[in-house]
Image (cartoon, rainbow, N blue to C red; front, side, top):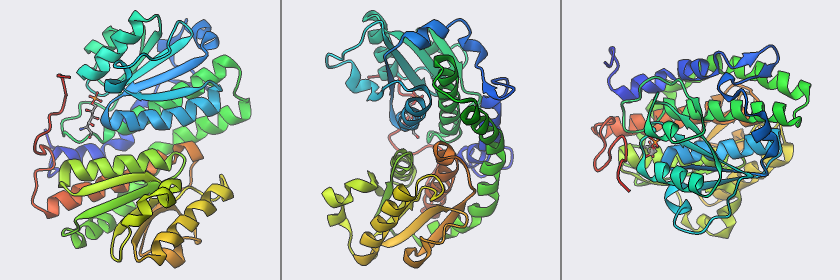
Amino acid sequence: EKGGWPSFMAKEVAEQPDAVANTIRGRIQGDAVVIPELDGLDELFIGINRVIITACGTASYAALVGKYAIEQWARVPVDVELAHEFRYRDPVIGDDTLVVSISQSGETMDTLMAVKYARERGARTLSVCNTQGATIPRESDAVVYTHAGPEVAVASTKAFSAQITALLLLGLHMGRVRGTLTSAVASDAVAELQSLPEKVAQVLAEETEHVSQLAGWMADTRSVLFLGRHVGFPIALEGALKLKEISYIHAEGFAAGELKHGPIALIEPGQPVFVIVPSPRHSSLVHSKVVSNIQEIRARGARVIVVAEEGDAAVLPYADEVIRIPLTGALFEPLLAVVPLQIFAMALATAKGLDVDQPRNLAKSVTVE
Ligand code: M6R
């Protein structure tokens, strides 16, 4: 039950520190990530030449974050494929391919069919799933469960955070097994993982009221854009999807670098744009590119709302609103940056008097193709 929360979504957003902590639990040994369920698969991880991650909707955005993490840590090429596109062409897959599926419910028909298709073509399959014993994990060679607990609201929130957490763990596990991870990188990542639940809680504590107020002021907005670079890009996509789903406002997420290839034509005075700003500590180049994207849209009158690391002062001259997230590693930022976007969508839908748990036309689990 809702336990005093106004909606299941509000409860599930607030449960994210636990979803992340529970997904990590039992999967760290000393300074290394060891996922016990993947015992005995070392040869598989060493032998593969390619990973395909397949999923739908929010899970496909977690997949994009997973691509960056697995490529960086395990040095194997990763493609992300929407499950419903994957099997209607003739993808190049074989026994050197690992197909990772991601599904909260484990029952999404499009994703299930993609897994079956991959198996029939000789690929090895691993599922990341939030529901014990669901169909997709039963149809897969291996499973890494996310431990977000039951998710009731149609809009996925805590399951998304748990999926990203599981994919970070998978990347670190694979990197260790493949010998592509230095022990210094591994132990930094482990320390970072362990501090994440508290940092997610900090974002919830410090930004919920601010972001909800912002949403209240924007209840008449007709369109919102979201921009991100690197792992901020999937978060921009997720921020836009949350808003579409529950507030019925037109929203689009873009890779910030795409702006000048088209979307910048949409910017007119007053257009709200969220920008996920990567930390300058990880790459001053990536950070400065995003800051110049912000300058470009600001010069055209956009109302700029940035999600930026604490202490990042470079964004201040160009931002109408600044939402702060704590310092973390580059690949971990999505777990913090997504939280204010979830709160924003939820508060905007609430301000419009909508049912955030049961948006129109949508089902929690899409069991038809
Ligand atoms: O149960 P699944 O993770 O397989 O569901 C996939 C999508 O249908 C799901 O993430 C959908 O996009 C959500 N409504 C997003 O909030």
